[in-house]
Image 1 (cartoon, rainbow, N blue to C red):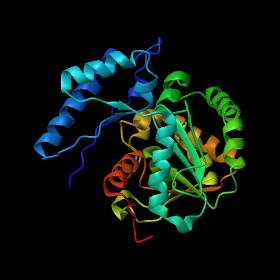
Image 2: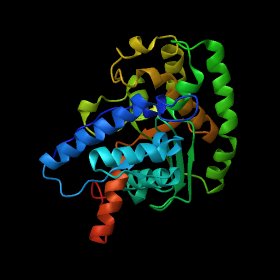
Image 3: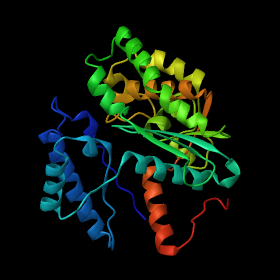
Length: 289
């Protein structure tokens, strides 16, 4: 088993017309081609290739997808936002098990925020909002570090954007467990004292609302270069960390959540689990739960 990752930050590479920039498209094509070669050399019999918010919402999405196919031989399947939310919820459910009861999940990506809740493995409510960390960084923050006034305005705007989604989630019923997934939540949890990645995926990690507020006051005064020096923050994501933290804070505030448990599984695992379910005709469990 091997794992290879690359950070493209496509949500930060959208021009004023809403198109994916040439440099962003070039990186996408290059990375898909590189990973296709890695898969081939590793003896992979099947390749599951998916695109999410940045490609989905780009005005030139069709042209970019055609170029990827023509130059790499790989056909990217574009996931809808609701599919993202449902598959991520599936991964969360399988990780925590049925004993967790009703779950509400938050996942912050580069282009979108996924919200979901349910007592089964298929959520009762699954939402995708254009509130990704990369997107908001591009649209709201021209200064580094961002100005206090700009942060305050973004906070108010996020609160307004989340009023109706929060009502939909709460209307489905009270939840027993609140969960955060994605690299953004893992980084925020680490910066507020959660166990490092070296402790392994089974280590219990949480993010509290109070800890997050204190963290935002700290990192919002730092440049992206300075944030990249913090433990658990990569240089690829340091630029969008403040926006991601503000989305996390707003999401927790809208839902009245004081603590999130961090799940190591997210969309990628949900895609794999769904494929295994279809091929094996059953469910794959974790930790015997």
